[in-house]
Image (cartoon, rainbow, N blue to C red; front, top):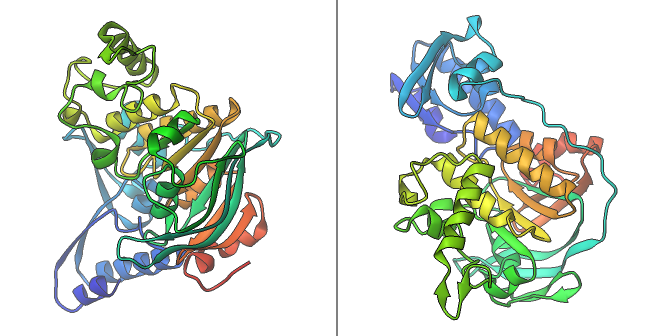
Length: 355
């Protein structure tokens, strides 16, 4: 925020790319106020965002890109969100996700007094405890860097816990291997899809069975059953609308949205007990975002549990049955989705209030 303020003293042009993704609600309001002030003083701002509410609030003119080409342009006073969405994805987009009320099922995930160190050797998680149940999406909200990544990695076996217990269906999986945890029914949509979700140099069909290549239906005595593997990849492409020339395309050549669809399809194809989804819609257009959110709700309805990490509060409020607000490695609150105290979520995200 201070960097942006500095531009008010000299720069004529400011370019911002998804600037609100790591801000609290209060900071977003402050940023919008700053940008409007810059405009009033004659500065020019280029604001790049997938968040249509922000585009409509901040911008005077909008340019829509689709697959690297200009799909449309308009004055914001002459357009609306549905029109912009149609330009972006070429069809109507539903902006309100219908989350059906479901009875809470049995306990799937139990985390007790979990302590985890971060990359710099400092505590990243401090005595975290919570449970997640069947038919539930449990959301973790917070500004990036407050322990969300470490929590997701500890649950999926990527990062070691210093102390505490993690249980799936009452079975202790603390500090076991990612393979073992996957075999216990835990799937993972990682935060950094290119680094941790795919093998970029391999074909689409190879990536369709990452973490599943050892399953009997895909291999026999150390040899892959390539017909079954390729049939599975074709099914994922069809079921999850993955746009690619063929299953023989290198995965690195797909768009971010199509890579994310493939990862989600792969991770839920074995009907997991628990899906750990870290920022599953980050950087996606409104069409791909709608698609991903609907599939998370379908997974919830099928009886799975979802542990959702997101910095998008609209996504958290739309999808989650319960919401944990995280700051500095601790939960400031764990509240039901309709709790009026969530009106103070910005203060909780900033560490100014604990419930």
